[in-house]
Picture 1 (cartoon, rainbow, N blue to C red):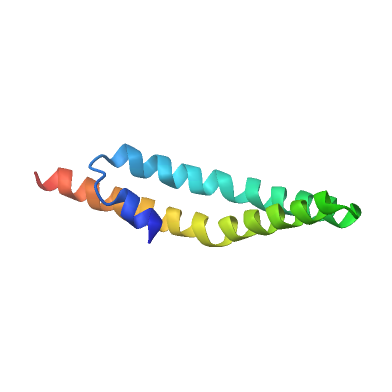
Picture 2: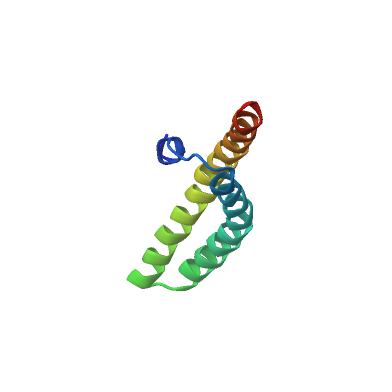
Amino acid sequence: MLVTALAYRWQYSRKFRVLVLGSVFSFPVLVILENVLEVAGERSDTIVGDLLGVLGATAFIIATFLCPVGLVVGVVGSLAEKLRVQRA
């Protein structure tokens, strides 16, 4: 919903393409970041380890939920905008 609400008023195909590229490239970065943070969190016994675990879980949630939604919204929005421009 958040991605759709933010992209609702976009009128240029370029913004949707940036959203698609951002989603595609941020997904593997966030997956790798999640793995690194989880391993670092498991090796530390202090509060820092717990914080790293929470950050790793946050990266996982963003990679799992936000990146695919951004990809779908970007592709659909880009196609819809191209069709709108072609009709005009």
